[in-house]
Image (cartoon, rainbow, N blue to C red; front, side, top):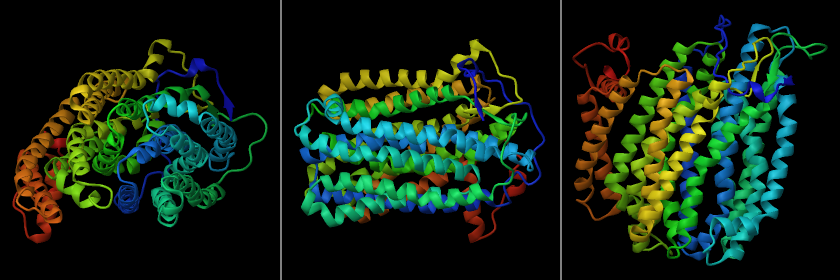
Length: 573
């Protein structure tokens, strides 16, 4: 493993197509099984995370203490997408995918996977330790920058120093999870948030009376250690199971060349995306106490729908990365188009549900203890505004993975080092799109917050992220993945129409009952049935297929056979 100069950073040149090794593809039914395991464990992690938020609301309500903790939460909240969910995955899944392709091509040569680990993991541990220490030492300045109007900055500084511990285990967890997913091992990576939230809940339940809101910060640090510990064993087993022999002498043509500076566009994009949270905390700190907490609770509930959609590309991303590593653009394009449609269907169904049932959902989940009716009304209103940006959030999550896979952190030693400086700027296109969206967020937030308060902040978030998604959709085509935009956008239009109709029908249904559980059930059932009927009637492939499958269970379905339907282009166009 060697490094190359920054001149190689920016090209979008693809590797030449190569014959896929026998057995390289996933087994029949692999995607369904992997998605099922990932969905179940991710749902369990989300449920435990929701229970964590319920306990925070019950024990501490929405006041200056929770505002201080949520400012401190900015550290793990920023570290998680950078080191677990986004940047680390964008970098290391394609890198490990390429290493596995090389291993399959030359099973008797030096193991590229071990080469990659030896070249990257020690430097990663050093960098993570430095960042963790820097965040702890700089906690006072960090709190002052994030929330200058905070009522209790001392508590925020204490909690920030505790949560700074998470940087190291988060980074280790992200690295190991990327390696395991590239090996098509999804169970342990899908369980990390179960371990994380169990750690938080254990400390919170036993120590909240003794340490107050500091118990939540300590639980976050403890949970991050459990998260990393869960992956060490499976990672070591996969590493030992690999073939090959130790590398000696000159590197072979199929050795890997490390491109360290390739991580910069990925890191800048992720941090810029996370800056939306910084803006909310900064502007929200000048609003009445509890505003930041209302925004946090609303975001946590809203993002459940987005997270469900992203689960699809969590499973399919290693397949896209392997296709791109082999130079197979057609397979990658088809997979990305399918992911965009499926993610949109899941997220828009969740969006319609939240729009229709937000007040009853918040009342059902949070309204107890220190969390009162005023908090319920404020949080439900923010959820409805946030929901306008959920589709864009999910689409960005789908598109950014193949975008950065086209410029991985490693390349084959035998491939030419590209020097196309003109196209090098495309590496930075996602960061530029995100920065432009951030400007929209700031402008809308600054203009709307004085009049609308937290709703203005949520509107800025939705407007900014939607702008970024539109720019990134165009950027993916520029990058070299020939998406059929008319098909993609036509399918999304059908799904949007179905979601709008489902919302219109679900709102009055939810209002028929005063009990929050019954109201949520009535509204949710109406939204689900309406979305299924309208989506199938409008010809949305992502809805029509599951509806027909469900109807086949109940009885024979007239019309074209599902086998014939598989040959049609996406979205039924």
